[in-house]
Image 1 (cartoon, rainbow, N blue to C red):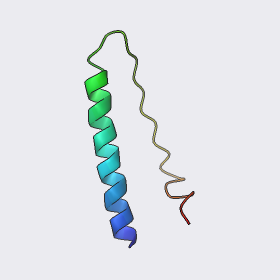
Image 2: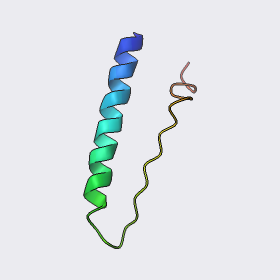
Image 3: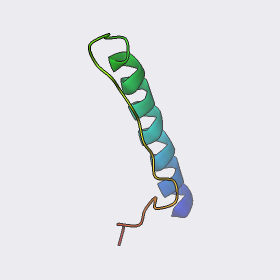
Image 4: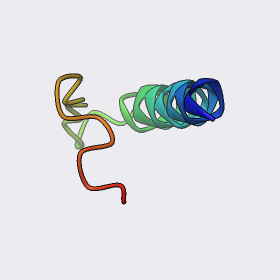
Length: 45
């Protein structure tokens, strides 16, 4: 199950990075992605 969570995390991170790159092409928008690698899954039951 942990490998499935890791795959989901990787997919979500990839999608967010691609979206940030897309938004970053607009000069009026400042984009900063922040990932908390130490607390990943901390809120999961």
